[in-house]
Amino acid sequence: MNTIKIEDKEFEILLENENIAKRTRLIGIQINVDYESKCPIFIGVLNGSFLFMADLVKEITLPCEMAFIRVSSYKDTQSTGEIKEVFGLPADLKDRDIILVEDIVDTGFTLGYILKEVYKQQPASVKVCSLLLKPEALKAPIEELEYVGFEVANEFVVGYGLDYNGLGRNLNHIYKAKTVTAPLP
Ligand code: IMP
Image (cartoon, rainbow, N blue to C red; front, side, top):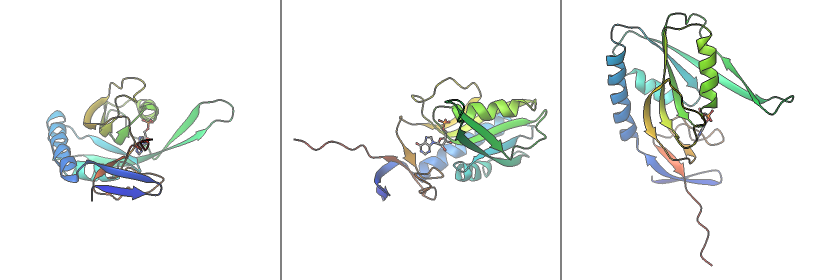
């Protein structure tokens, strides 16, 4: 199906699963080369990364470990800023090689916060592997962003782990929100 509807929004196909799988395989090969004779720990950021993480680690032939974290955000009533909290970060990351696995990097704020928390434990190295990147939305460059599946335009996407109002994570392909064109007068 090329067009789908979730609640009020219509979406059209952007990336087919076969395309995602091919790209994931290539990233896996690259990681296998880059981390030869190391034992990295893959840390998936829930919920969005669950499918990408599962497919990515199946391509990894290195000895490796896995963990998942969740980031919650809430508005601070004292300031305008958004406070984030990281749950489930393993406590033994000192001297480890870490690969953070994300579904999408948008503004990069979430990732920036996670990186700050991870560095507190003095790991040997930290790299980020994100399936999608919205370069136009990124607020500041992220040095650790080593592996990117696809760059996408600054538009809302759903499927293959990504949600719209909690829905659509189970979709096999990735879809983008259809732009509503005003009717001709
Ligand atoms: P950032 O902090 O702005 O980089 O946002 C990152 C998080 O926002 C991602 O991990 C997603 O959960 C969510 N997100 C950003 N853009 C999209 C999108 O287009 N579709 C679905 N979720 C998104």
